[in-house]
Length: 225
Image (cartoon, rainbow, N blue to C red; front, side, top):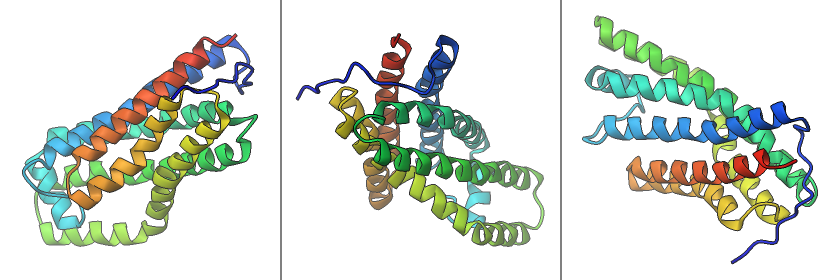
C-alpha cells in the first residue's frame, strides 16, 4: 500500500536549527526506550519483576548493571520525547490536527509522569546495594507506589492510548509513509501483547518498530525546506 503524501506540511520548527534539533529528538528519543526495554528484558530473562517492593529489591540486587542502564536510557527518552512528540504533531496539522494534538499531548503528559516513576530505579538500586532491613525497604517502596498510582495511570494513558492516537492521526493525515505510522502504532499493541504473554521481548519489538517509524518522520522533517 502506498500513501499519498502531502508535500505542503507546515511544522512548528520553521527555521533550520529548530527543525534539525526537533528531528534529532525524534530520531533519538524512541531508542532510549528500546535500550531501556532490552536492559529490562535481559534482567528478567530468568524470571523476576518489579511489581512489588520486595520483587524490585531482589531484581536490583541480582542485576544492578542492566537496571541502571535501563533507568538512564528511559529518563533520557522521557526528556527527548517531548520535542519529538511536538515534531510528530506537526505532521498532522492539516488533516488530523485535533486527533494528533490529543494523542501527542497525552503522550507528552504520560512520559513526564514516567520520568518521575523511572527515577525510583535509583532508590531500588541504592537500597539493594546498601543492604539492611529489606522488609522495611520493601514496605516503603510499596507505599510510594500506591501514592503514585494517579501518575502511573497518566503514564499508561499517554504511553498506550496517546501513542496509538498519534499513529492513527498520522495515517489519517497521509503526510508520511503508511509503514512509518503503522510502526508507531505497533508500540502500544505489542507492549500490551507482552504484558499478556508475560515476556518483555514483545515490548522490545514494539519499541524498535516505533523507533523506526519516528526515524522516518525525523528524516522527512530534516529534509523539509
